[in-house]
Length: 269
Image (cartoon, rainbow, N blue to C red; front, top):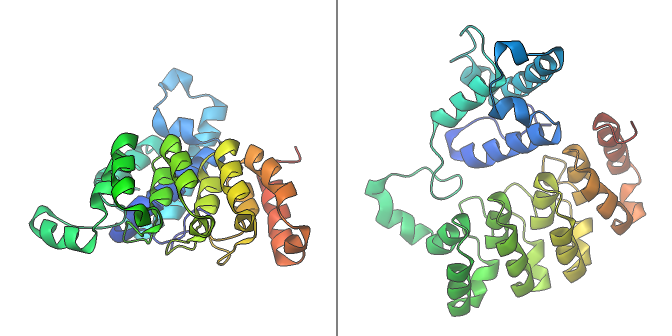
């Protein structure tokens, strides 16, 4: 079973993209991403590198579960980078997030996902093409464009297309920003987990202040945005969201959870 504090789902092929994004966000938030993306030379493997590598490797092991990890845990000299690269090789990123399909089922796939062009344009960062699609179909701004129930804004955030995300926020009705995907994440709570760009968060909150109050559970990205930001160690996001969040929402369990994450992330250090 995967560790819920790191990812929301046990490692499964149908959840691969979202699972991998959650794990990456956790590693970035814990300042461990550098040991995952680059393999140090033997002479560069300081005590600090060894500590971070061990932490990252442990997180990957917990997140992917014993069955997936068992495929390579017996290899000698396994580093966090080797483990991460192995996970990337286990399944190539599909064209639509979380959807397993092959070329033979292309026609059925397109019928089930009429917004494939919009998804692809966002993924590729083609803002002009995105705007052309939205001009023809304004309702597409609030449509669910993936099997995980993501809106176009969710997808822009997932792929780091902040310029497209900002444009989508401007085009969407305020209530459209409250749409949650199947994991319970609104665009704001998803963004709070993945980015420190306060300007985009401000744009969403200014358009619909209720976003800071929405919670769809206490899992990874479905909690209050302030709690999600603290869970991932997003200090700038926490500093912005804290005064925006009604304090009565932080009485009881949510307040305790927030304090726990703040301490764990070293906010008081």
